[in-house]
Length: 153
Image 1: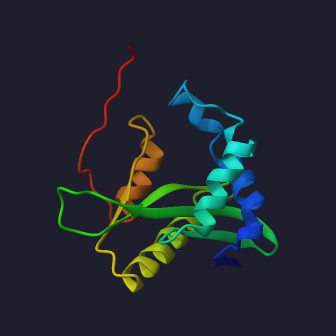
Image 2 (image 1 turned 90 degrees about the vertical axis):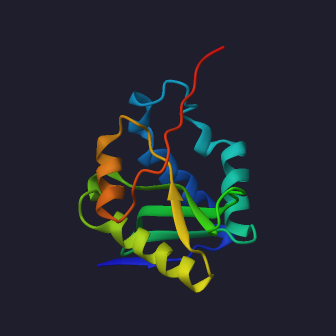
């Protein structure tokens, strides 16, 4: 049975290892990724701030004692829009546990938390060519709002 729990600051290394594992396949969408980043000191600082920052929230999915997925969110300021936003900064499920409803449970738990904390909208970015992630977010009620573009200089 999958249980969703809110981690403590001492669980920073669990988040680092989950992030590292779930994003290994993202190289095919972004050749600019620093693949060891999650396990670096910079990654540790990032996840520590997520766990201790005001308004941030994280949840970890466990199969027994095994962490199998996570979601990490922070407030998003959008000065030209009326709603109060919570952004899914990153989330993922380890490959062996994908397509088993764990991601949906994580999004549902964040949605519940966001409502309790008076947010009106959830926001997430995905790689344009990551069709599985985009389909997942659509199935969970997200819709396209913009398109981000970049170029080298």
